[in-house]
Image 1 (cartoon, one colour):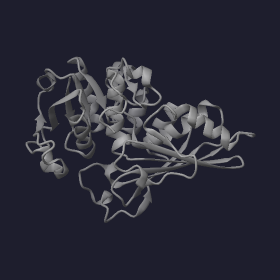
Image 2 (tube, rainbow, N blue to C red):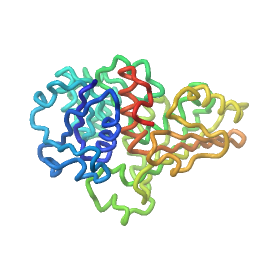
Image 3 (cartoon, helix red, strand yellow):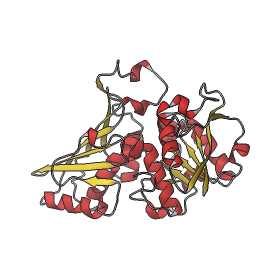
Image 4 (cartoon, helix red, strand yellow):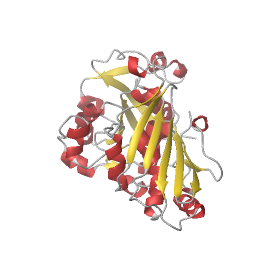
Length: 334
């Protein structure tokens, strides 16, 4: 039984993590924590998220002493802000914990990335070098020995799952950069209320054009440049990405289908569409990434959907936990 701690437990992803871990037969939640300054400290998780009443009636405690919090803990999930994870992860690692970080603090092994896109200078380059990127379907072997797992961003998960089989099989004419148009629900902005992310105020709007930090994350791990434009939609949760690519001459729809099948026929949390493309409603509340595509001549459009809080965050983190410790990959997720 793995004693497990969640830091940042009061947020949307933290609550989903707690739900999965509470029903996981090999984990025991030993603590739910938030920053010492959080207004959520001292409240029950089920008070903050009423759907958990009678299921997880544990208090959310302030994190004041990392060494004390780490005592007897095997696994820590950090559902915290990037700069907070940057500071906390090495402390929990020093205490012997395996750390799953849902922030962007250890996703890209380039220190310049953090000063440009995250606004801080990375101070833990040794751990940045050792961190394993938790794109679960593609990094299974590396996860098995990892001490620090950097869970991918929500947008990058769907984008990479869509593009990696095509790039690895040399099907794309990459002189034309793949164009990723992605729309997320407002829960992607986190639980703390803001006017800009209110459903009542949100219509449908692109943001971070040419500047969003997920573009270099996607490009870095694909090893290829992409155009990435995120949009905010006026719905609570879920991500839909429409990705436009150019195929190399002679590449057929059957070639594309075979590349996806080879990559994912044995991967239980990626669902492929033989006909048509997925809709957002197909994945909300579920831990899957669904992928469909259409081909016309040399033009390819891939559509991928996922729940940003699940396959885009907490479900993938638990999937990584299962792979890390040798549990069934979908344990507690399905």
